[in-house]
Amino acid sequence: MKTLQLLFVLCISTATVLAQGIKFEESDWQTALSKAKNEGKIMFVDSYTTWCGPCKKLSKHVFPNEKVGEYFNANFISIKLDMEKKDGRSFGSKYPVSAYPTMFFIKGDGKVVHKIKGFRKVEDLIKEAEKAVGKFDRSEEYVEDYESGLRDFDFMLNYVTELNKSRKESLKIANDYLRSKPDITEEQKTRFLFAAANEIDSGIFDQLEERKEQIIEMKGKEVYEDKVLEAGMNTVYKAIEYDYYELVDEAIEKVKKNVDKDKANAFKYKSNASYCRESGNFDNYLDAMKEYSKKICKKDIQASKWAIKHMMSSFQGEQEHIALAEDVAKNLLKLEKTVENTALYTKILLQNGKKDKAIEHIEKDMKEMEKKGEETGPYESILRRIKQSR
Image (cartoon, rainbow, N blue to C red):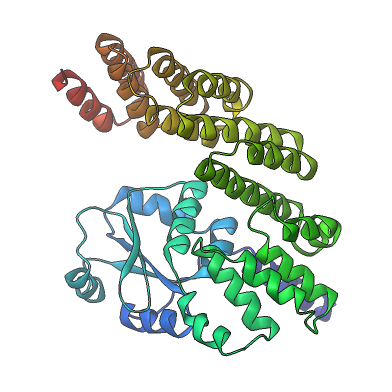
């Protein structure tokens, strides 16, 4: 019985470890930076204070999240710094902080790759982390060895991975490697194809697609679908660059074959909207965004935020376009009522010439919050800005 109890405790402990969030180093920041350099990673720094409310929310609700931990522990050496203590003050003398929380992504040589301020929810924080990884170019470290003839599997896998992270051309190198018929296992070839298939209109992606079941078994359905969507969007970017819409059609068809219906539809509308925006085709752009807003944004917070950002940076001054952004922002507040989303909605109302409606909306929210005994300070700040605007 004791043996069974011990095994049960060990299983619980193991599960806890596997489901942990971000693993923060218990060292000073300079030691963490050295470790990041030695491991070829970025140092992630959460600079906080004990009195900062958003800092506490991050520590309680976001950093312990399993998805956050999985991504951050794979890509970063992480450390938390109380900026009012000795090590935090030392860090602050080199990397000044003007607001809390401020989160830094720093290369091993000490250069800041990316920096964000304020609270972030799980998905938003992961997206910011992905931006940092995208800016971390290590591909140059592989060039000399590649040109000297090094072709072992691990080297080639890492080289192609780093090229793709840095958004550099990798398909020729990947194709040359595969044409050389390297002495690798089928499992290694599958891993290589997964790393190399960064455009959906490529022969390498076609080979990847043939191994769909193996990859899903190896990495999971969601990871496979994310890879397909990423490769598809890269092809859309290429279509935009070369003004060749047929590539968009090809990407949409291949995505449709490889991901579930909702994701495929969202990809179709986003792809068409992106292409039409860059080609200056307002009518088709608006049609695509209307479909995306109607069929995707109604129940999707992240899709709504993408649509609003996309529309507000496109075809400025077009009335239908701003009106649609207003509708999406209004629906976003139904999905997620936050200070950030309220500020976004009122900003769009102002751009749409509806200052009185923006004031009315904020004042109504404040009355409801006062009845509940909730803090209205952030909303008072938004209201002041609205009233001061022209």
